[in-house]
Amino acid sequence: MTLGEKIRQMIREAGHKTLEGFYTHLADLFEDKAISKRTLMRALKGKVVARGQTLNQIALTLGVGTSSVREGTDAEVSPEDPSEGVFTYNDKAALHTFSHTLPFVPGKLVLKAGGRTSEEQDKADAKDSVKWFMVQIGRVTLVLKSALSEERKTFHKGEHFAFNARQMHSFLNDSKSTSVVLIVHYPVQNYNF
Image (cartoon, rainbow, N blue to C red; front, side, top):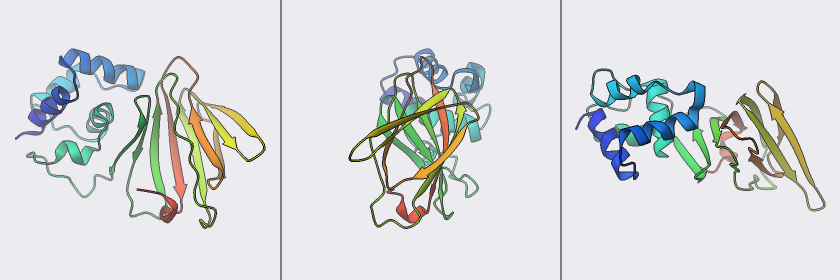
């Protein structure tokens, strides 16, 4: 099976009745950073090999990792492809994680309009538990909770922040467009794969 055939099959299995509908969903998710419809069609027809940004956007829109898309096709997972997979919080929030061979976990959090991650925290005994993030597209609000209070901080494109990941936290997007946040979770052993 070719990579293009596998992607078409996955699009159908994900419930998209048409390629146009799938592309509309992809474009809504990535807005002005979305691959072109022409690029998607060329990848599906095998005129170009879907790699990098193209494969990542297709996989994120399908809610899977790039290795799942390539599995069982003529396009083997290449060792230079650091993509590891996608953790889906819900239909409006997904974290795309990358290489686990580093001492930290880099990732890209995509929050659709109104999206929110689940509340999470590292264990109390986790060592050096830090999350750093930078807003790449849009704006995002970090919600930090303690036993007595809740603190909300809103960050816009280009702004960044680091916090103790042992504290209960979540991210939310209360805007009307998709937000993308780059996240680094340190150290890797505190991350729950």
